[in-house]
Length: 628
Image (tube, rainbow, N blue to C red):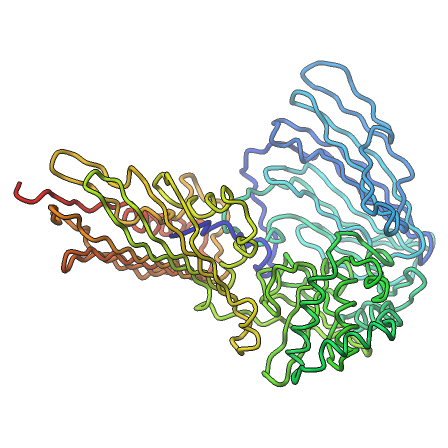
């Protein structure tokens, strides 16, 4: 019952290690030249100039030449030109700014956030050239992040990134895979990073962090003067102090609403009970909008304004719940996080690393902290979901930021079980009664399962199966979302789904024998056939368990049962047993995938492990008619 076992890549959880170029790849595109320069003209203004030429040799590499520029009240696109040259013959296309696709991200509700995009068309090979300038004004919290490539199988001939600042102006930077140099001249200091002949990278399942594979540069001013708020970002404590400034006066609520909140919580005897009441209220009265409200997307909307309009982004909703909790005497911490990257850049504190805000609510009465996701009402209260558990975060206090790591759950809690009762008919058809039990992160794809349409439910429940379901009916859905917090169960969500299905083709008949699948509801372990390029990285452990009960049809007996199997390897543990007693066949298969990292050169060992597991999943047992 391995459902999407290897789809969780190690991209965002592995530590940051030295760059490992993959120089032997067959590429889809080549960046012939890529030059970016940021010229700081004052502590609050500057110009970012980009010039790049990309050779696209395969349609799969077209995205490497896609243009995406973000602008807002702090950044404005001031010039653009481009040229698309079909090398196989055809007309050269000259581009101007009016040819870009403009999309407003604010819809008049926030600042003028927008994107400018372009995707070149035409037969390959194509030569694409862009030149543009973006003007910065009213503050600079970080310089543009330089990523030499963002797509797989794209090589680079040469690239250069320059940050040009007044002499004596302090910056901080972190880079990988690029050669750094600096020089002072004419009262200016130029920090430059260069790259020559990068071979690209390949995307594979369960691969290392992307930051091990691509060249990059992060750079920021040490001092911040942004949107009228000044501070420094030498470390996370200073960044927290600066963010605290942006929140001042933004937790105020109308006295009438405060009285209503206190009335709602009058019967609560613990902080957890108050949190449950107000989280439910937040779910029912607000909605999340993915808009970058506030100063450069950094300042939360005022709590009173969120209450008035009924929506907000992650900052606004988290700040609003924080204000409501304060109104009933419950303390909480505004928390900044990157929800797709578990580890912060080592030794490099910067505002640009975070992309999300949550709320941390300490609950001394249960000796735990509720990490509250305010943007998705489907998440059970306090659940440390896969975009938060184990992540480094910064709590924003009035006296500064505090860097901590959200506790991860024990690996033993991440599991999925399926219990299947098979009623097999002599003609090979069958009716199955199934119970799927999901724990912890396995719950996440099913959070909205109750609201889904029947055909979507059917696809979710059968996509791992090797049989064709003629009829499927969900008979029950239960979860612990409304009780697991107050019952002190450690914020661990569970879902149980009961369903039945029928199929005409469960077993194959051949003369007086019936060939019955040992486990038709299991999904095979995936392994690639070709040469492995990246190391194999599994983040954590997960357990998948199948228990199948199959009463032997009257007039038949077992002729052959597959032998049991037990494996103990670096990649996982697996056991498979099948027994027949008192007219009933019992099948039990359990696999535990283990966290770890395997060098690409040793991938054949994992492939052999997967082959044995898959052979057991694909095995059949043989029944024979009595009297023959």
